[in-house]
Length: 164
Image 1 (tube, helix red, strand yellow):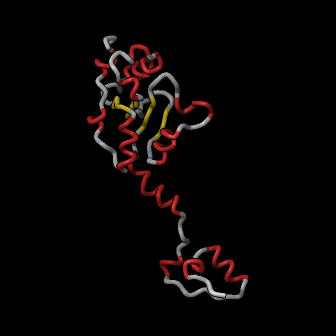
Image 2 (tube, one colour; image 1 turned 180 degrees about the vertical axis):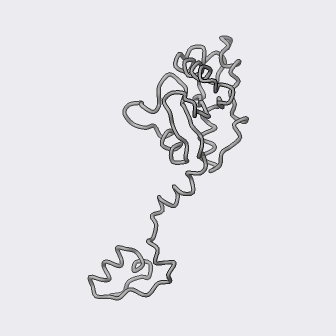
Image 3 (cartoon, rainbow, N blue to C red; image 1 turned 180 degrees about the horizontal axis):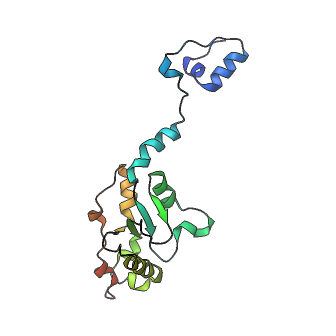
């Protein structure tokens, strides 16, 4: 019975070979390190992308507690190193607005988002928190780098006006 070298190098292949009485070929010292799962490699590469970013999702619903499961946007942000929070806190760096709330007058009708903005003001962090369109997060993840927030900044005065 013949085994491919890739199969023999895998843990499963090694177990099969041992059961059948085959010796494994010798490997260089650096290859003796346990082979890593691709998910771990991807996690190591993606996690630094948004490291240090603390996000609160604006909008009428708290996405972190929606229907008992994490929405894809939340899971994606976490995989790329962002930390998610239900409320604005001293560590908050970004308040993400869904595209529907970036239209003129939309924020004036969203009580939860208004409360989050007041919370940022009370904490004294409103001036440094990036108020950005949710697409900033999605585009940053798709490019595997933190994109400039200025490209996605939401003009608070524009979205609060009642004129459409």
